[in-house]
Length: 82
Image 1 (cartoon, rainbow, N blue to C red):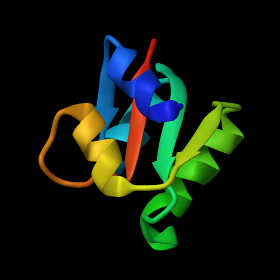
Image 2 (image 1 turned 180 degrees about the vertical axis):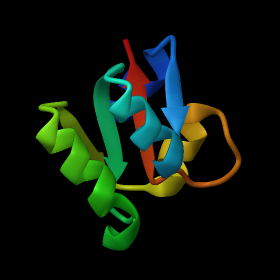
Image 3 (image 1 turned 180 degrees about the horizontal axis):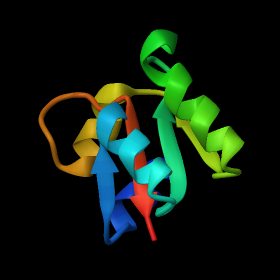
Image 4 (image 1 turned 60 degrees about the vertical axis):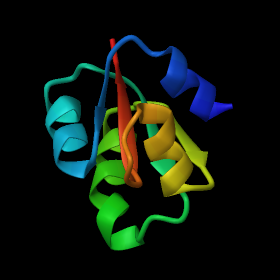
């Protein structure tokens, strides 16, 4: 379900650093997190999103999430931008 949201999104950012930056800028509509990503990688992003009341969706695979974003590598986090 969330893979389709990424495919349909007009604007999004990929990766933890860019996602944190977008969250701090308060421009994130929804956060997508790969469940198979390491908790050390995603914990800060998830905590910040919860603090800012940004909806979080979990998907099962980094590889599939990366593919939905049009990249050849896995993506731990993707932020859909307003």
